[in-house]
Amino acid sequence: MPNMQPNKTPMPEQDPHVRNKNFKEVALGYTDEMAINEAQRCLQCKNPACVQGCPVNVPIKDFIHEIVEGNMDKAYEVIKSQNSLPAVCGRVCPQETQCESKCVRGIKNEPVAIGRLERYVADWYMNNREPAVTAPKHNGHKVAVLGSGPSGLTCAGDLAKLGYEVTVFEALHAAGGVLMYGIPEFRLPKKIVQEEIQQLEKMGVKIDTDMVMGKVLSVDELFEMGYEALYIGTGAGLPNFMNLPGEGLVGVYSANEFLTRINLMKAYLPEYDTPIIHPKNVAVVGGGNVAMDAARCAKRLGAENVYIIYRRSEEEMPARNEEIHHAKEEEIIFKLLNNPVAIHGDEQGKVKQIECVEMELGEPDASGRRRPIEKKGSNFLLDVDCVVIAIGNSPNPLIRSTTEGLEANKKGCIIVDDNTLQTTREGVYAGGDAVTGAATVILAMGAGKHAAKSIDEYIQSKADQ
Ligand SMILES: Cc1cc2nc3c(=O)[nH]c(=O)nc-3n(C[C@H](O)[C@H](O)[C@H](O)COP(=O)(O)OP(=O)(O)OC[C@H]3O[C@@H](n4cnc5c(N)ncnc54)[C@H](O)[C@@H]3O)c2cc1C
Ligand code: SF4
Image 1 (cartoon, rainbow, N blue to C red):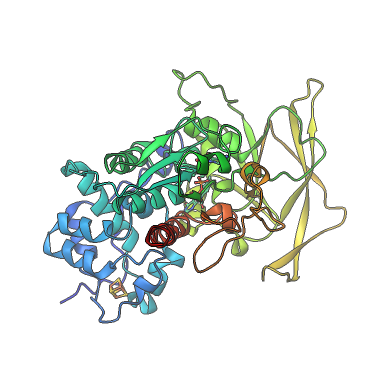
Image 2 (image 1 turned 180 degrees about the vertical axis):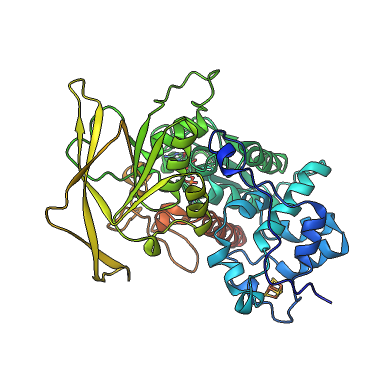
């Protein structure tokens, strides 16, 4: 008999007033009893709708069944067959709009907590097993992957499994992309990201860091070096600004810079060299996950007041519900239907105030969301000493501007064939945020998988000729 309890088994969390002063993980994970209790809520549907919601098609009911049976090694194997970064996905995937949104238990009650169970299995494996990964036999073909975010790593892992000699070229000094420099430690511990990456390395994937491709080596040079195909997974790391008066003042950051200093360079720890200001009052502009992360980091640096300034209402906020909920619990102040128009500084050129206007919502725009309209004369000032701009990112133009024949659209996203993910250059494939613009970890991974399959077909068909 399945467990018909209507709600998900709750997951223990750090107290909001304690956690908003530290960078330790907020959600603490299920115990064995909690995991089994939750796994028993799954009805083991004959035609499981949940799988259709998973961009990499994890056999969800099968791994949940193995949890109920207490076969954790098997549960892990089932997940790993489709997902190379389960500990990451269990933590950061927007399950509410993916697998869990399709779960039949969600029609009347809360869906099965698929993400929490995936995380549980991945953590159990990391804590209890020493993975004995061996490098498969090489097939004599070389592929280069540009960028070591979830998309590039997934593509590299799948190709390595097939016997390819894969080198990942990464611009930064550490692999992982947004998982390392963007998403904070309190949502995704960096140790976990590195452990998942080490497994790929054991499979024979070579990771070459400090390699800004397009500058150190061009796409053409890589082909000359004997790589037979390339995958571009360089993400969308170029921050957008608002062109507000005062955006050049000291104390204004892009969310990228703010988060990179904190997450990658560990600026919040005194023993690290990279500095960061410890502001008292912070305005974060934007309503996505990036804005929530920046606001929650600012609180943890000791800020008294952290404002999220968002021009629409909460309903239109693109951030995950869980992130909004956690931010509110941590006393982040939401200034909804507000938009900044200028940043004012003091005599030393440092941020002193942000000037905003009130907004109201009009008719839906092209994105389907109601368009914000400025209320004339509603200007007001907020005292702040730091402003973080988190209104979105675009793909970095470096590789496409140094590669002849590689086409991009108006937004700078690389153009690919939907069926193969091949770009407009033969043998060059692309996926993840570099193609879609800022999206999600699992979609980036799905593209990496898709491209690995196409690259294999391409190289094998050439070898057969
Ligand atoms: C702060 C933040 C929070 C987020 N939260 C979530 C979340 O909770 N859930 C979720 O699903 N998604 C979230 N996202 C989105 C998600 O992280 C991205 O969609 C995903 O990381 C995209 O993967 P990618 O591999 O395409 O690119 P990236 O992760 O951006 O990786 C690209 C890599 O390529 C490298 N690179 C760039 N240019 C070059 C070059 N010229 N040469 C060599 N290397 C290069 C970069 O340094 C980087 O390491 C978040 C994003 C941010 C910024
Ligand atoms: S849809 Fe929900 S109940 Fe059905 S198999 Fe998937 S997780 Fe289990």
